[in-house]
Length: 162
Figure 1 (cartoon, rainbow, N blue to C red):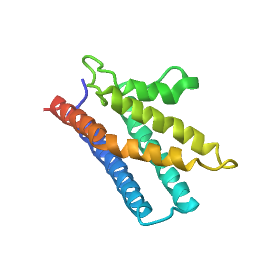
Figure 2: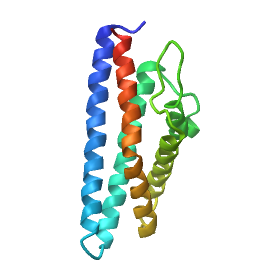
Figure 3: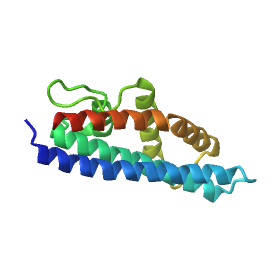
C-alpha cells in the first residue's frame, strides 16, 4: 500500500509536469496562429518542430514519473520509449489506473514519439513543412482528449489516498 504522503509528493510532481505540457501546447498554439499571418519562414517550421519534440519529451518525463512511482521499471531497454508509452494504457489491477484511455490519444502520442526521433536525427536534412504542419494539427486536435485522460488518472490516484 502506498502512503498518503508519497501519493501527495507524486501528485505534486505530476502536476508540475502537466503544467509544463500545457505550457508547451500554448507555445505551439501561438506559433500556429502566427503562421496564419502570411508566408511561413523555414525558421518557424523548425521552431514548431522543436516544440513538438519538447512536447513529447515532456510527456515522456510524465510517463517516466508514473512508471517509476507505480511499477519501478521497464525490462526491455531496446524498446524503452515504445514500451513506456504503451504502459500508460495499462490498468494495473490493485496498483494504478490507466493514464491514457483511448487508442486515438495513444496513436497521436506514438506519432509524436516517432517525430521526436526523426527530429533528433534530421539536423542535416531539414524538416518537411507539410509533415510538421500536419502533425501539429493532429497534436492540437487531440490535446483536450489526452489532457482529459490525464485529469481522470490524477483524480483516480487522488481517491486512492482518501
